[in-house]
Length: 164
Image (cartoon, one colour):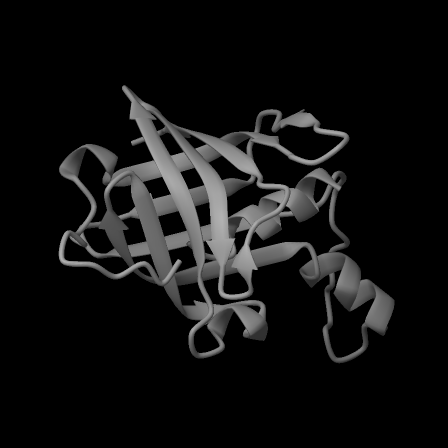
């Protein structure tokens, strides 16, 4: 469940274009790791991501990339993909997710526009997710606000720390 939440949290950020949209402030550029995800709704939960944290988010002046492993345990090792069963392939490769694209920053908001993603739905024309952003030192919080489907009813809050 915790890995599914990380996947959902990382799948995009809103089509909020305005005259103030700009590239990421230099203070947010770098390499980050998700350390905590908090779910919203009637039964909110906070999930701490233990070391080693199998995820990285890289933010440059105009692009982002994020990869993460969504598995609570070790993945299967597939020595010969041509002979592996569907279950072995799902166990080895299913928990891996990634996405990269461009983004825009507005006033305390970020909008991502995926160019490539493991999930084809994330790459659909017009797909996005908007997050409110808060940066304090080397800690960044992203809180879901909207997707291309509308406002997020039970937003996730993702806490990341700078690793480089």
